[in-house]
Image (tube, rainbow, N blue to C red; front, side, top):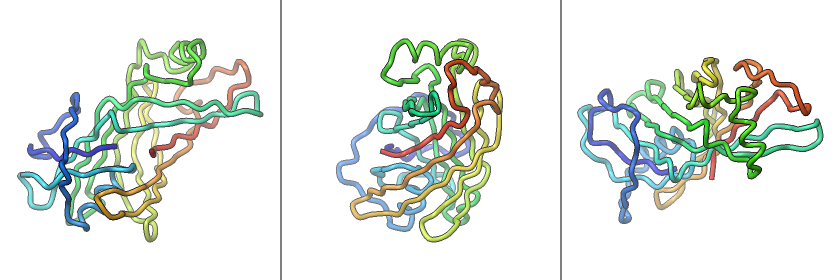
Length: 214
């Protein structure tokens, strides 16, 4: 995932199509880099700090091109089906004075589901599963960010899938590295039935593991 620091006030930023910008070797202070990469949850090159209306808060856009959202579900109780989604838009607002006040928002294109099998993907987009005609996006909004220990973090938030919102907790492991890059890994497991996906054909598993990383 790539983060692009916004020059607008954090409260004025709305999810919108994002665009790549070259960083040309720009670096960011180590303390701020540590907090941002944990919030970003993924490998990130960071832009140099830009203008922001608040001395405590800085806003960062999430780059859809560099973001990988994967999922895995057991099929027929023996094999796993793996797939990916594409990020549509997102942002991180970082409160440098109080990390718990920082926020993460992300919108995922539900129709982008890809398991490398066109017929299966078409079925996943149907009303049996994601019903992308009526629910074209999947959204996450953080409500709490807390450090468990060391480089282990918990990000609690609301996941909206197929028109239903449920609380989830992302388990984040990672730490900063030299050169403005880090390798955090985030994951959570949901029960698809909690979101109204109750299709039972082909012995499709109920537990879905979602992973964010390179």
